[in-house]
Length: 409
Image (cartoon, rainbow, N blue to C red; front, side, top):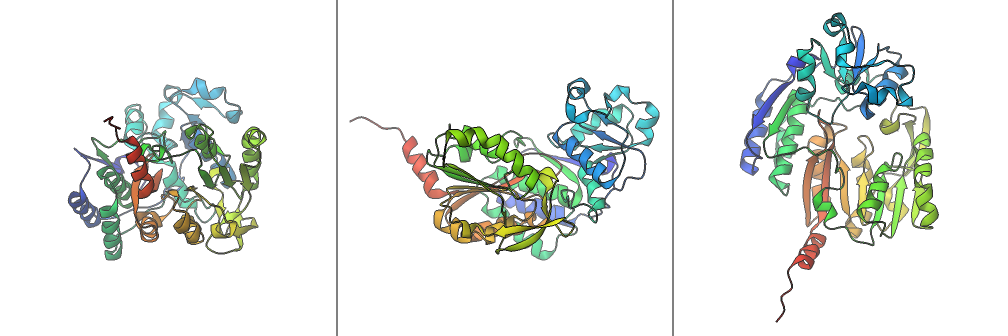
């Protein structure tokens, strides 16, 4: 695995309804499965100097795996970025043909389809290209990053569980995105539906969410990182809200979180709360791998123990909960069932960090939350960016009533 030709594209005219989605699922399940994580076995070059490229640089440096330089479609833009000081940032044409033919190019771009990114590279003579996450999957014994996982063969239980989830999504777009997700994770096939966009700008704040926000939200940002999503929430509600609880256990991330939200905390005294806990299913201490930015997480490879709390123990009257904690989302939900069931918040949960996202995680949400509308959206490519949305129907219905035209007698 690892060569561009082994990742194929499949195109469909429109998003599938429930019946067609079931047929396509069985089509995936019948195909032979083969996947070998890609080890670095030749000179390594990074492609993409954006956010994922930066993560890849730090990843390979942490593992002691050298890379020659980074290639980007807009090299001049990134050469001015202090992050890349000491690293050559080249354009595609700047790389000698010999290296294009003999190096391994790690694709560090997930904001566009793999086939779209690699097509011009192939024309320029690059022979061996692989998604960065497929390379990272080969080193899971040394680093906890897990976004390159592969489903393996879908069991009968998997098929039954996925069928149930597919039938409960609110719209055909959700079914299309779910199938795209499964096809990549099972077969490394890149599926396209003509009427199904993958939007990269609205993660956690799709139109269905924005349409039901009100001015007294209590937003719980679980896995807050540096606070970017909390800032986007503030923008979405035009700074009209009751409270924010930003929860981030990584010390480096938490420091950046404090810096980013300091100005808002000064202006909104008592409304923004920053918590350093990790969330899980039970109150405990658990080994945690710090210092990985977005990828910091629970791991046996971790350097220290971190305090773990249950969401229920925090007694937050949440109206909007976002969870992004690198594959431990089910545990956080289990530890917050009382809060979620009693408060009936909007719930947005990432689902792409491990195999539970195929169906166990959405099934858990669908089982514990009654009278909700469920959506699934992909916000990036390469099997990443999958988010489950659960919206309480009473808020949807209330918004619909407010939107009804009022007639004068």
